[in-house]
Amino acid sequence: MTRLNPENCLILVVDDLLLNLQFMAQALESAGYEITLASSGKQALERMQLVRPDLILLDLMMPDMNGFEVCDQIKSNLSLADIPIIFITASNEQEHVLQAFDKGAVDYIVKPFNTYELLARVRTHLELRYTQNQLKKMLEEQKELVKSLERLANTDSLTGVWNRRYFLKIAEQETERSRRYNRPLSVLMIDIDHFKSVNDNYGHAVGDEVLIIMTETVINYLRNLDILGRFGGEEFVVLLPETDNKSAVITAERIRENIEQVTIPVDGKLVSITVSIGVGSYQKGDASIDILIQRADTALYQAKNQGRNRVVSHYFPQGVYS
Image 1 (cartoon, rainbow, N blue to C red):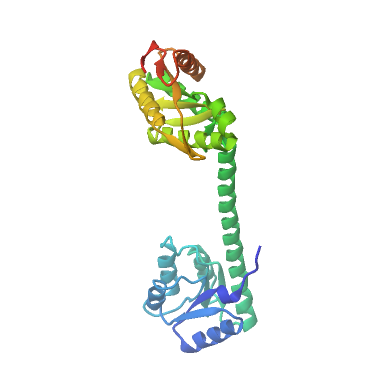
Image 2 (cartoon, one colour; image 1 turned 30 degrees about the vertical axis):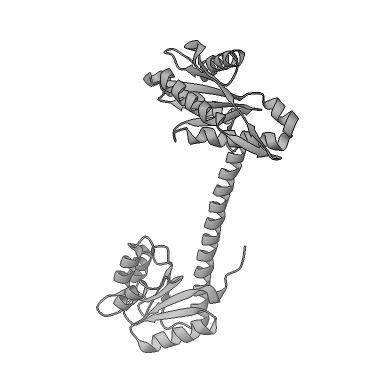
């Protein structure tokens, strides 16, 4: 963790007496701090509209608007509330000390004070705030790292879609929702036709490109609430919440038709691909996602047996959509 650099710290000094301002300004500047001055509470608040100090030295007793009133306004502003405030006053009354901390001050210095005391207290609270900000930044970075690691653990490294394990987790939740509220839900099983021959004839790099392009094409025809996962190899699965079998077949056919139009240039040639798609839909009483996937998988098997490049639904095993 890097150390506090006084040159990077701006301190707002607020006091209605010019001599006090000059004394504190000289002491702080000699220690390397950047400073800005205000001779009244109103001027201090106006100054904070232009700059955001890292710490405020605030005189308690001032005409028109005292330090407590200034502190109240600062603390009521969410964008300024975390700025540490050190009250400075000639009063040594216990009531004032307690009220200062009650208003949100981090410290209280009684006049007359010496330079060493002022600088020591200023540095202590700046270092504390700096450390808190650093820790906050580290925690935010850690949260982002955890999110990144979770996503890496839950996604397919090549295509970026959900992997089998995480897809099944989400799909099980959607199946439970469909069962509880009797809502439609469908599954598409998508398999690239003759994918092995693509790898054999053009190499695995081209095969990977085919998988990526196919995935991107499928995503273009899905809604935000739809979920796409890779089950392994060239087999993908799509979960379609709030979608009955008829609508799922229409979506599947749209995907199939558009993938059929895709061509990939390889060594001066254009490689085209097709997919077979099986559709399975939720039926009242289904206990788990496994049943829907089994229906879609059976329909996919039938689509391949019927010549590939077609959509088959478990409701229409003869592949009326082809």
